Length: 398
Ligand SMILES: Cc1cc2nc3c(=O)[nH]c(=O)nc-3n(C[C@H](O)[C@H](O)[C@H](O)COP(=O)(O)OP(=O)(O)OC[C@H]3O[C@@H](n4cnc5c(N)ncnc54)[C@H](O)[C@@H]3O)c2cc1C
Image 1 (cartoon, rainbow, N blue to C red):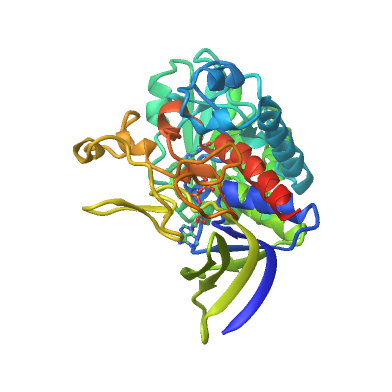
Image 2: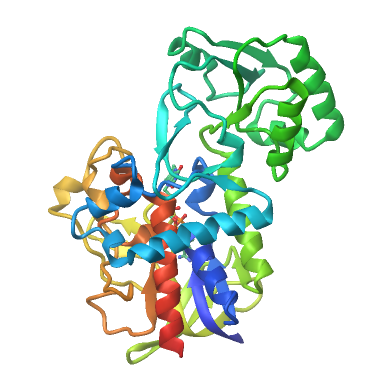
């Protein structure tokens, strides 16, 4: 077995794990991040929901039930985590607009509005009401994008369709990275003689160069241009993930990609190592402290069986909401689904309660009582709790 020593081992490459890892690697710690795969960020709109319950997210957080893990994060740490995020995204070339004091509206592919806080600059020009006229450009064969739905809610908007030669979001986004494709697309767009105030596109305007592509199109036609997030696979979600991953690596973090954890080595109250599967021989990653950021059910951190809900890496005790028959609802994404409260209970250092283990900290979607859908607090909570977990970890090691 090969053995590698680290200060901190992080489990999970979502917004929580990558943020905690970047924080620690940026302060000189030797950090490894182990992940079995891609995070839920790749399924998301890429927008940072902080708390959608109040127009001011910080006020909304104060109104959350007492058990909500946001209450374990000092107010200044919530703001620090959002400011750090915005600064990092600007540095890496995919800036986010918005402030922690105000939610904004993001036009969805169904023509409804989603409430979020920080949004990619490619969505910044989205109207905040139904009055502005929009011209929606769609692409031939593109599934799950419904300009007619959007237009049916706005009597002053129009749509047109471009044939990009491919019909998947990823395929069209790759085409936009090609300068000749972009040139001929702009020629076609100008020929549409668009009268409407703004031009909207499904979020397929490039893979990593979307900011530049939006600017080029907008300058060429002399109108504001914005992207509408589509259902997965989501380009803005993928851009967010790639940016966080690049940032972590830039700070010196090491990623063990696609290596499921197959064992944990403990000595009394201390976790000493995780063993990962790899081609050839198993790998032991030794750490002084561990951060669990494996997400909830969709991310893979929790599994529900007939008997119990299981935390898959360390088998930590899972807080289970109410009697078992309340775990079921036909719609998993229902806002009030009781299962949204399942997860790991933690103290103010984000150390799991109900376990003697001392050197493990937990952050993100795997925490108990998050009710992410109900309170609209996905990536925002991941950023904030990642900062607390990283700081606790730092104190513990020192
Ligand atoms: C469909 C969908 C859309 C969403 N849209 C939005 C949105 O638009 N805005 C928003 O703010 N929030 C959104 N959310 C919520 C948001 O994605 C999550 O709350 C948040 O990103 C959680 O991040 P995380 O880092 O805790 O976990 P996750 O993103 O779930 O990442 C978990 C990571 O752990 C890894 N992992 C799991 N098990 C193991 C293991 N045993 N060993 C090693 N690695 C493991 C996974 O591969 C993954 O990399 C959405 C959620 C879903 C499901």
